[in-house]
Amino acid sequence: MTFASIIGQQDIKHRLGHALSGNPGHAFLFLGARGTGRSHIAWRFAAALLCQQPDKNGACGQCRSCRYMQQGVHPDYRVLRAREKEKLIPVELVRRSVSADVYLRSQISQRKVYLIALDDLNEQGQNALLKSLEEPPPFVVFLLTASAADRLLPTLLSRAVVMQIGRYTPAEIMEILHERQLDKQESAAFFSRFSHGVPGVAIELAESDWFHELRTDTFRFFEQLSRESRASLLTTGFAFLDQNRPVLDDILQILGSMIRDLMMLAGRFTASQLINEDYADLLRKAADQLSNNKERDWRERLSTAYQAIISARRALSLNGSFEVLACNLILALRKELIYA
Ligand SMILES: [Zn+2]
Image 1 (spheres, rainbow, N blue to C red):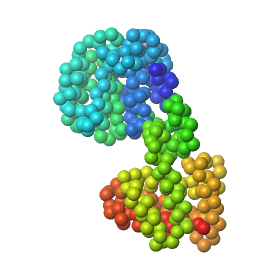
Image 2 (cartoon, rainbow, N blue to C red; image 1 turned 90 degrees about the vertical axis):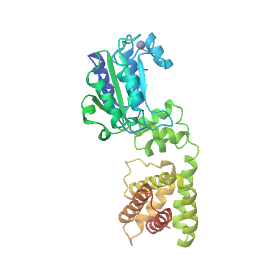
Image 3 (cartoon, protein in one colour; image 1 turned 90 degrees about the horizontal axis):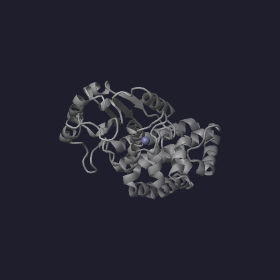
Image 4 (cartoon, protein in one colour; image 1 turned 60 degrees about the vertical axis):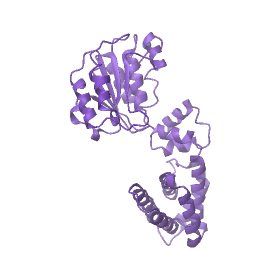
């Protein structure tokens, strides 16, 4: 349970170790997108702050405090986040669990630690918290998590040491998948590169049973673009997108990753690894034919196709008409990606 055993995030681990060896300060903000492990890192730091014999790597994992942390029953560790069905932490709960509680002494550790999900607090809730943050008793440490700083009150932000959680490399994500025994499946390497450096996304995809099939179907759709007539594509391709409306954005992201790979292959950027390495043969063949076609430049075609995907994702996020989106996408991709 040391924070030194966290995969990646060297800078944060170094700074946490440093904070622990001196006087840690009373508020830390872990900033990072959902799935970057911000609560996981904060929990390990909390364990170290509460541990009876921590070292620069974090908690000892053996003492009474560490055992309570592992069992999830530490009396000096409080977690405040929205309950499953509610989107926000009620302001009343902030007043009761923090403002009124903060001055009570710790029970078994030297300190008391609050872990608070700021994404679940509205402005009123943040204001209620601010009073405790401004003048906390010396034995209290606040560990805050948030996706982005721009939703937070500047007064609150200025009182915390900010720990920005960076993206993880594909190799680090593979290690995280390995820890959870999710690296055995053939798509594991793909997940590590497709997840944009966010391990939570890779884990979610690796654990899902639908994503693998969706990706197979998306590659089939890609092959149809070259093989079928416009009219037939507007039926079969449209049906494919229509049947998968709830996961349309996932399809668009898979298509985007294929186009990125086609650019790498057509441009002979051999040093850079493909996202869809397991489909390398199919993609290489398509890239060769695109780059051998002298009538139109492959760079222009691939970037136009990529733009069509970005436009479709934008239309989707703005709740644009599905029919218009699907037809535009199919026709644009067919025009640009036809290779055979
Ligand atoms: Zn300990």
